[in-house]
Length: 84
Image 1 (tube, one colour):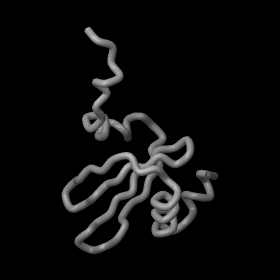
Image 2: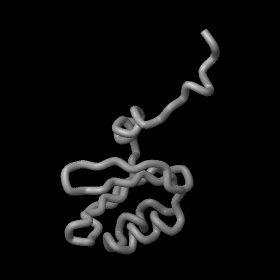
Image 3: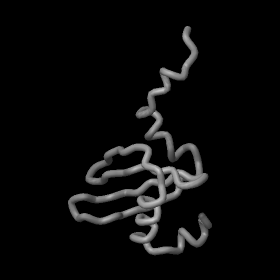
Image 4: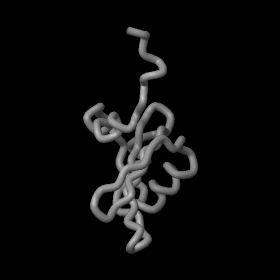
């Protein structure tokens, strides 16, 4: 995916691309928003949706690990940790 071309597309098209071609990973909730995390190629992307108004409000590519921080508490890696 060419990130420059992707970012120039309208919000609805970007959301559609992520939802259709991305691999869904997690969901979190913030205020009135449902925020879904996807993996698309080498990128992670968030799609912010407002159910009350039935509309997408934000689609963003997470370029830094800081953007993934809210999802880290959701991941259980206990099965892959070495036994103590």
